[in-house]
Image (spheres, rainbow, N blue to C red):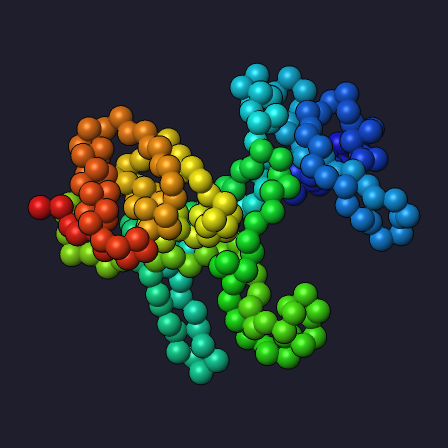
Length: 248
């Protein structure tokens, strides 16, 4: 049994394993899945941890939100082409270290209330590299568009002055928030909330896509003032047109 739990790298348990370990683990039921060789769907569970090791807050939150997708926000990437040429795109903050690599990506954790919320996978779709797949797969309906997947390359814009153009140590591009809106369907997003507003990039994204109501929280008055300035600047533009000017 210990081996089964240690080998559960994806932190999910099949129904049989959970039945054997239910006195020792805390779990949340995820879904039913079809398994080759079995006639009936099998329940799977998310392994939260061992009994006694999970805090009360964690146990309370598990009933409110489910991790539905893990997205990798790629800030910078280098790809070697077939001819040997290396192409680099994006920006990253260099790390001066003999031990650590430059950090060129961050995680985006997509939580929903049920874990079963339908998303608009093709809103962020990309063309097929191999066009024969369009006819090969029936789900394409003849369209040259597939799901982008969970790696999102959204680089920072090139700036000349961090203090004037990006005066916050932990910002994300407006485009990252825009993609999250598109993923859930622009017409379905009625209200958007950012509990850590920063300099307001999420608010700008909401304005760009016509979200009816936006709520943001920010404890730092300097960042809040910059967020308000950016929102006012964006409000002076037609809906959908990006372009926030630097602070003066």
